[in-house]
Image (cartoon, rainbow, N blue to C red; front, side, top):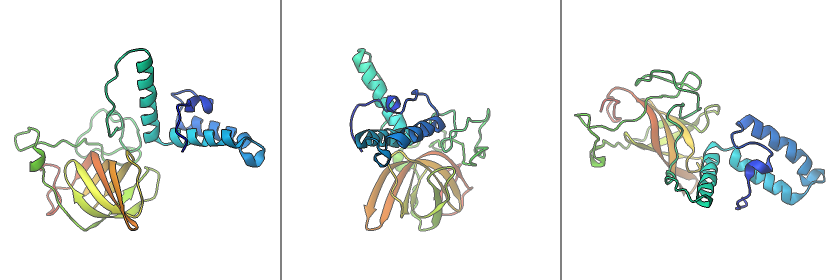
Length: 228
């Protein structure tokens, strides 16, 4: 992908707050006339493809918007808080499909659209205080689970590697980009997590992800429970 500071929104003739459907329609209309196969300019087609590749991916778009905001603040001499290394969806929407949350969310609440768990992960000790990382129970298990890389996609099989109250690791045949939000469902858990690492060994990828929301079964042996 071409690395530059061109305005992707301007290239696609859309506003920065344009919804995904508008961006997709604008890209299709432009590429239909700019593609070399129909007599267009190859360089312009590359720019359009680059812009759409960023703006059509929620994680890449969020990172791009953050960089634009930082550059704008720098030009105006105003400080901006440092962007998170692992951006997460806003707290007021489902972390998987971005549907607005209901007025009340408890440990069993699921999204009305994608059925993902909505309860945020809280890591606390027996007295309700934050638990030291060394005290968080971790497990290694070789069970199979299923993973959704998009709320509308089909599930793919993954092999469990590790699970804790703040992270999950699986073996997958699919490479995941950083910050990709996925849903992973096992026999005793259902979590939404953001990919923070992906390492390849031969044809298998080890995916590490940070939990955004989760529903754990009550204590069932190897896996931790929601009340652990």
